Image 1 (cartoon, rainbow, N blue to C red):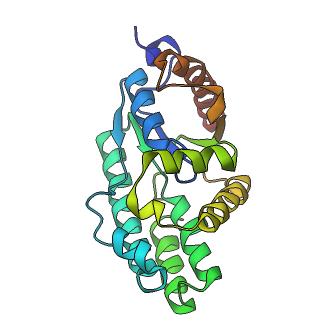
Image 2: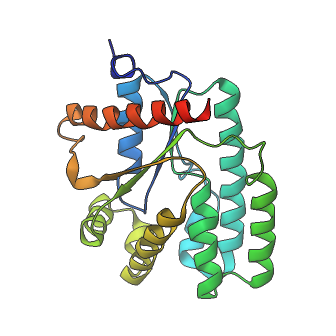
Length: 222
């Protein structure tokens, strides 16, 4: 019996992992999907045609990057639900508008016209009764110092060139965003409460919490 069966987690559930850069979303996605015998859905970083250009010139490429992410995440969200669920998803579609596009507009690296175009498109695509929202959003959180350490340790060149101030602002914006988020239920998990890299068994207490929240939510929806 796997953990999904042990804790009576619905086989068609869709769980999204959210949190700032470097917090461990991809690792959590892999380990949680394995524990639940679910499929994974990952952000397409390596094939993104704008990412390197964006890190070199925020102002020039921020709008292009956000439109690309919106289109890719929208297509992926539709695919997940058309398949019938049973997925753990790395990063949510909501973070793009609630954090990244908003940050670039307020910092002056995205024009007002571009920001209004982007948010109008987002609302037409996502903020409708027809868009399939996840059953649960798991928000990974920790201290800024710990997250910055993880960014440095994984050593992606484009991230190493980015000023610390950028990561701090993103961290603060994530905290504000999650406190206002209401598109689906939220489970907040501190990254210091588990160590799934060294001991995958530490995922079980998290699975137990997920089961409780999913089953509570589905009872309320009936």
